[in-house]
Picture 1 (cartoon, rainbow, N blue to C red):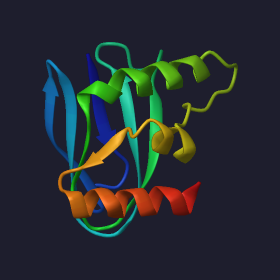
Picture 2 (picture 1 turned 30 degrees about the vertical axis):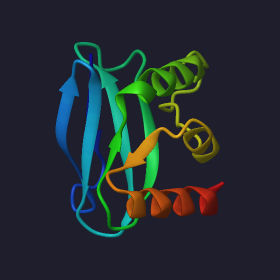
Picture 3 (picture 1 turned 135 degrees about the vertical axis):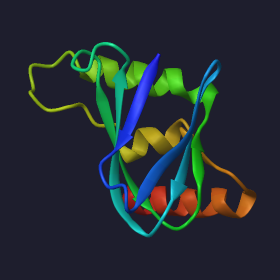
Picture 4 (picture 1 turned 180 degrees about the horizontal axis):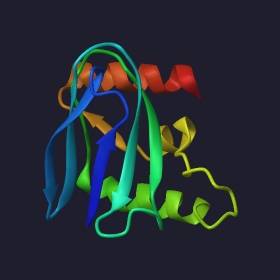
Amino acid sequence: MWSCRVSSKSVLACVNCHYSPMEFHFLAKSKGESTIFFEPMGNYAAGAFSVPVKVCRENFRLHESKVQILISVCAAGAGSTSAFVPHASPRMLLEHEIFQALSTSESHQVERELLERV
């Protein structure tokens, strides 16, 4: 099981967490940049990783079918000797369609934002 926290609560908030199947819903409070930190419950150091996001204005979710891909890719990077928490790259997020908007128009906006960052 994983928990998440957001670096800038004035920009983004995790409003709903489901653990079976795993899915996180996020509320975009304002435009800006934030980082989502994912940590295994009960062990806050090993396996933790972060995802930098640029928030437009819409809500989005981390879909349950994509969570394991995100965890696997970031966990592979966590084995390095770096003291920093591993980051998921924008290209990886786009290639695997990790984040899904909650409507069709939101989906197109999220895709445009990711393409701008890649």
